[in-house]
Image (cartoon, rainbow, N blue to C red; front, side, top):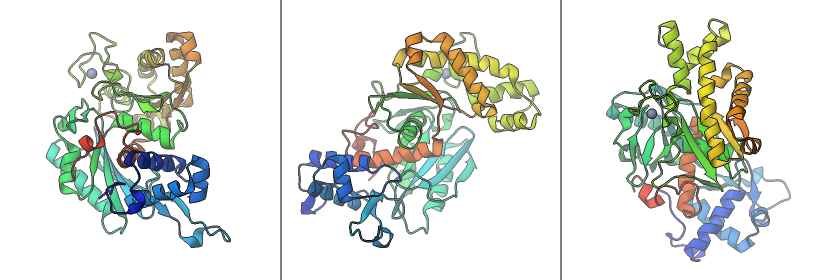
Length: 410
Ligand SMILES: [Zn+2]
């Protein structure tokens, strides 16, 4: 169980709680993934005094978020022991619930996978079976490793009511509607479990581990299963009144179009997502194919989806142009499989976006492919939640209620 600074009996953390949290947060931010620093180096990088850094490090070691590297690994002649984000002593689990397939894997607190084993299984259509399959996969990932598991992040593609910890509307995984995978997994697993809106998770992962490192104003557009948007504004994810912002996939682009999973017609995600591409190719070939199969057929020369691409990119450009005009992001990172067809496709999209965007806004925005993936998104979500426990007022995930409200169980 995560122990919070101030809740323990140690006199070293008797300083005012908020100040202690701010310092701990600063230490965590200085220790980027992959970095190993001594207390003195952390003090120099953060501008915090050495005794204060030591206190913050103690509370983070207690919480399991940091680990000291064995003296044998330290540079000879330098007695100071190095610290890093925990990856040998502690781990987190990421669960990605997606329309066709679920994936489960473990990572260190630096967000890097700690084992090559990723468990995949077809997404059960019944909710109870989905929870049982996820619980089983998490148990297999965490059993007998001797490593302390600090929590489980569950990425869900749909609207999440963070205050009540519910998946309220998922057009692509409707079996989760009205349920709380976090509470239900938390009831059968001995770890804190939290839900993460899939696109917000991707946005966090891009910012921590991907191409958006160091950026405070950018957008992440996920066109994989449905279409979701997450906007990082001044280092915080734009959440809206109740955490439901960013559903650009459900703006109407074709008033008489195809029925969407949300119940409306002609939503952007029905014509401009990986799923839309797979469905259009399925119709053309008169058999069900997934986006992976479309990619494989294109690679082998069996089928190239020329007609499908042209229409899809036009609609997608309308969506991207809307994001550029509305939010003035410094960059848009786009996550989607269909760009794997060829590099030319992404450049084609950018050219179409240019034609539909106000020139000053377009000139100010880089449009690039995202680097982070959905597993990293689930890991980033639980790591952010754990960091949130240290510094709740500063986290970018504090959009939906306080950490206490979001917590699934104790
Ligand atoms: Zn819709």
